[in-house]
Picture 1: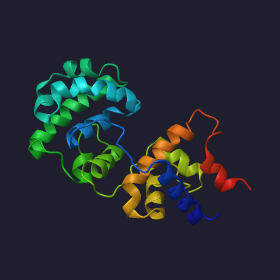
Picture 2: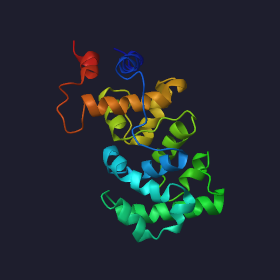
Picture 3: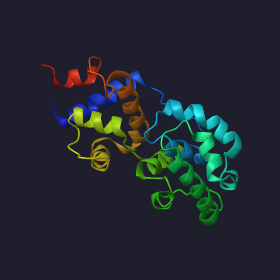
Picture 4: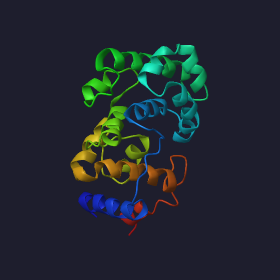
Length: 206
């Protein structure tokens, strides 16, 4: 099976499994999405969704977040890993949004990635799921599966993102990256043995 055939197989099978792709992180607008994604680093989406209702009730806008002290933000997100750093980033992020963008989440990678706590993956999620621009955010699930399916030889998520964008049509990027994440969690978890990973078996078993 060629790389192109493997990529087509991935698209076909994932579309059967996940015809709809709800965004895993609960949010109401681009700002709360950006905060939720920033909080999700080295933490499960489930844990973030448990914490954000209380956080957003108190600080669901940059204006309200900026008014909180770091220790108040930390208290609201203390169950999440790296809460010290994340609290500091959320306060500074809110302040810079007000200072530079009138409290409105910008719609360019350069401006997003200039905000504290916003790396390329977070910016890509905001651009794709918050604003609808074509993007292919790559997390560890996608990097691992793309490598497993021999669709990339990338050494890191940046190289894997580049390969994914070359391999898959732009119009499916926003949906497909979520489909791969869902598949990884359900059929090929990082700590599992991959017994349920039927896509890999279809590709490589003779």
